[in-house]
Image (cartoon, rainbow, N blue to C red; front, side, top):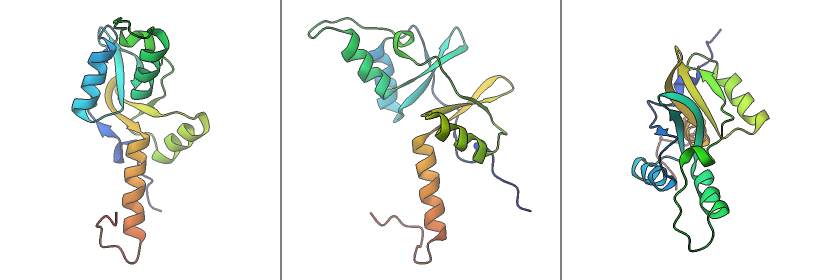
Length: 144
């Protein structure tokens, strides 16, 4: 019987994270510079949430009146409902929970330390790679 892959097989390892006291503009800049859509949020090294580009957009527009120059902090808009997964959790189980609970990302831990993040982008990339391998006419190149 073939062993099922763990979340480690497709997660993004060693994710960038941001302190909850940082501004939304700093989070946005970090996301753009690193080409990511999610950042684990910490407070003095402790994981307290996750912030997405969507959270930043909503936070910036919902809380700040038009024309105002207020810069909220990440802790104000991040989601404190975190789906934590262990690095050795079966991938199938993690994907099932993410689907059933409509979760955008899983924060991956190893020995109570941040080890990675699994997002919809990671899942789509992995699925596309699998489909390319299964396709009889594929040579591994992108058709698009």
